[in-house]
Length: 76
Image 1: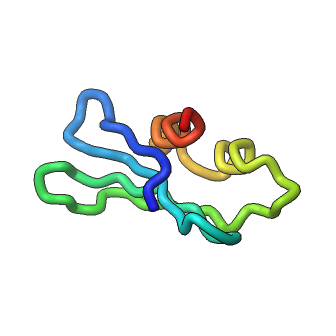
Image 2: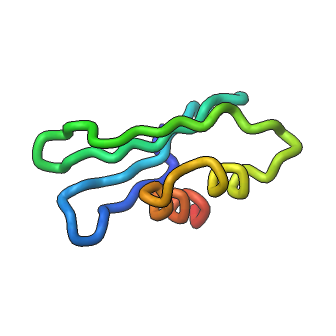
């Protein structure tokens, strides 16, 4: 399930955050080119422990290109 997404400013790409909606699962971020859907970048975060702050763990473990999709997910 997609939980956050954004169009990358000044480019033809979209970044999105996804994971299963239930249970302790990995969190993924993909960057894809819009014109053909080609995967350009991917990063996965191992499941986050229930006692950890999810947004802090994600910000510490993923690259800056995922930031806008993180922010979009947090706003929902």
